[in-house]
Length: 139
Image (cartoon, rainbow, N blue to C red; front, side):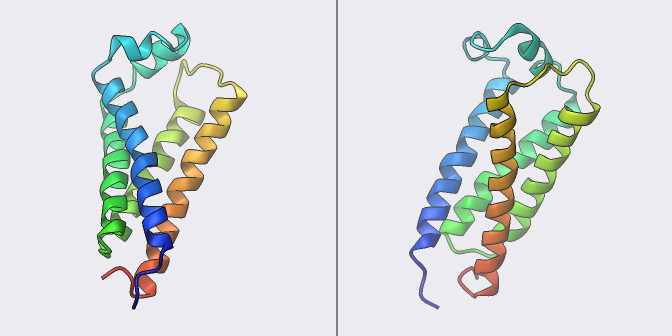
C-alpha cells in the first residue's frame, strides 16, 4: 500500500507533542531549578513529591510514546503496542494525580484543558496507529 500523506503529519506532530512530555519528564526527574522556578509553590511541591512508581510510569508513558511516534514515521507495526502502553500509563498517572494523590494542588482551567488534550492526543495516536496497521501501512 502507498504511504498516505497524513502519516507524516501525524508522526511528526506526535514526535513534537510527545517530545514536550519527554522534556517535562527530564525536568521533573532532575528537579531542574530553572524549570520549577516558574511554577507556583504548591504545584512545585506536589510535582517534586511524585513517588518512584509514578515516575517509572511517567517515563514509560512519554518515552514509549516518543518511540511509538518514531515507529509510525518508520511505518513499523510495533508502534501499536508501544502507544497502547503509553496511553495506559498516561491514564494511570492522571487517575492517580486527579483522584488518589494527597496534597494535589487545585488546577486552573488551562491545566485541566491541557491534561484532557494529553489524554485525547494519546488515545488518537493509539487509534491512528491501529488503523494504519490494519490498513497495511505499518508493517
